[in-house]
Image (cartoon, rainbow, N blue to C red; front, side, top):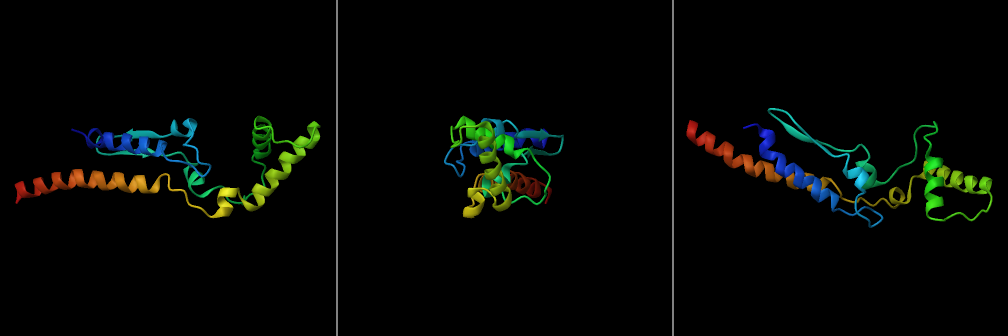
Length: 149
């Protein structure tokens, strides 16, 4: 029996546990992020592909290191519009508000990053899963060793 079939339940449980964790904002992980988790199996191994953005959910978004435009201003503009946060009435004023907020985040990082709070979403759950798998296979390896010796 391939090892991937034996540890798939633990990997699925890890993904479920991560989905229940709360972010800095107090809300659960977004479904769009959870859909990016993928279990990869081969004949002799198994693992999880984790979204590249996961550290941002744990530590926040730090200041930008590059001066290339990432399109963040448009995302912030759409977010501010959805939440009705504009003070300006004109389109140019609204865009300038989003632009100034984008500049501040690019310069200093977001609120989560500036608070230096670490929100444990993945690290502890990963360690627990590794311990479960170690216990599961530790007994199995011990039995094989006893049979050989």
